[in-house]
Length: 283
Image 1 (cartoon, rainbow, N blue to C red):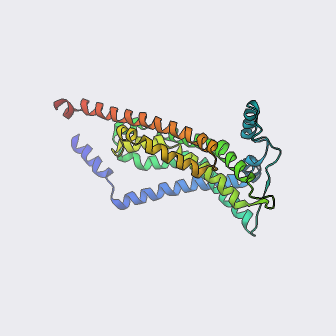
Image 2 (cartoon, rainbow, N blue to C red):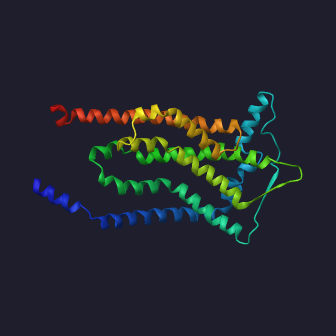
Image 3 (cartoon, one colour):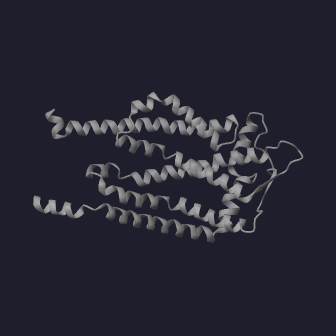
């Protein structure tokens, strides 16, 4: 029986080129999934552009209505407007077609994100121990959930705050804002994708703790430095006003604190396994 298991293990061992070949097929399947979702987004052009992309520039966008009511409640008139003072234009022959293509690819990547994670997990999981695969079983669901929450946060919070500030900012009445289509789409895309990736922080900390690069003590020790980095990131992906930066910084700080507890739980589980192992009992 032992010989048979050993033979099976030898058959399962793969050379470096075999691993590259397997990785290539995982990447191909992930790319195909993104392309298929991108083609669907390409077909539903009116919804993608008129409803989603250009939604945050309209006065009836949910975020503006909510902020307007909140401002009125405290006697202010912020975020209450009929129309943002800017126009969007395309100044190149292929501008609108290129925007259509790249926006569709971005939408395809966002929608296909869980499947891309699944392909990544299929490539990595054979190298994990059986108990590690069990403890990481919910990886795809949790990572996808955090990513989509981040995308929604970027779309409903960061994007409208940025568009409202930058679209209304004027150095002189002589200058009217005519934004290029690619510039507007880049702002929306960067806000959404950056927020989605930032919300993956607990997952990143989980794996860094598993491989021993991060500890709860390290995260606590450098909490102040992390806060400074969070504020810098908030300043980069939001307009340069304090209120917007605080709105973005708060959930990121919360995610950092959650990551500390996750790191602590991983270390505690690893120590428990070491104590319960035969070698741990002998020591």
